[in-house]
Amino acid sequence: MPKLKIGFIGTGRVCRAHHLPSWSKLPNAEVYAVCDIIPEVARAVAKEYNAGHVFTDYNEMLKLDEIDVVDICTPNNVHCPAAVASLNAGKHVFVEKPIGRTAVEAQAIVDAAKENRKKLSVGQCLRFDSGPQTLKGFADAGELGEVYYARTQCLRRRGVPTWGSFIDKEKQGGGPLIDLGVHIIDLTLWLMGHPKPVSASGVSYRKFGDREGVANTWGSWDPKDFTVEDFAAGLVKFDNGASMVVECSFAANLEKEILNTVLLGTEGGCEWSPLKIYKEARGTLLDITPVELPQLDRFALELRAFADAITNDTDPVVTGEQTLMVAKIMDAIYESAETGREVVIP
Image 1 (cartoon, rainbow, N blue to C red):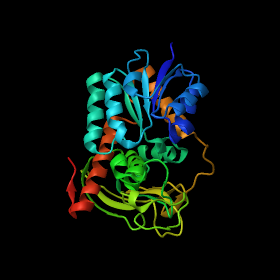
Image 2: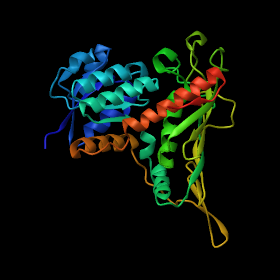
Image 3: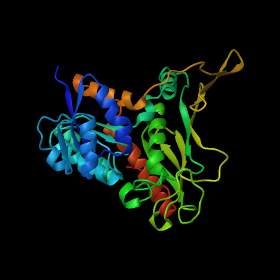
Image 4: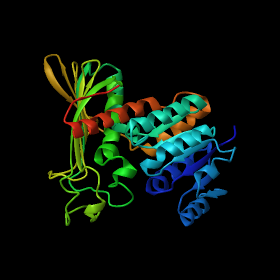
């Protein structure tokens, strides 16, 4: 069987650290073309991975009929136009999270995939970690019963990303909610079995971004360039009566960083970090703690799963429709934060 020929749009940190190495190690894939707006970067990456085609304009790259898959690792504002153009050119598309800055952009990408009958997946890599995989197994086996409440948090004490465009609302669409919340919302929906969201209430704050001299793990920033929130939280309600609280921050006065999801069910509960499952049996309350979990390369696993979906003509593990649901939730939280009202999710 011929190898899948992969074209890359954007070769920033996540692409060079994870996507390119992962694709290059797959026996059924080939790094075929590279596109980056910085010519010397594109040439260097192409040389490192023996890619025979180098571009600075992705529209030119998409003219290569032999490309099977396009992997998009650009700033968020390029996700939608690049993905739609790639799908319309007859390519399968893997786009790094978030699928788009808004649900409107996400819907356009999902519609293009359907119209062109091409596979679409999004980089929601947390699902492929050993901890979430373990929890998913328990949830799907009914060990938690009816999951009626979730709390998910990605809270950094001082973790403002000062490179790239993370603090630029026009390019990114938002701050920690769209950068970090997209991961934990997707993970929690997946663990809950993807109930349909019906409404959301939210708040957002910028209490650190407008200040100079704030201590930060990744150095300082210019306050005039900081146009996103540095903290956001939301309450989401679902059509089955369940609810979810989400909290995320780039900067907050906390004791330590928190990355965790807690699920409460009628037959058991669980949390991801540290991974524990809470049950009762024979009148006794029990805490179930794994002794050892394997170390998994979540980026490699998500890209392998997408390659397998193309090769075997099956649905991707992470679908466009699922990530569209995440985009709708984030839109509603942002709108509620601006208006002060609960927002209905269509």
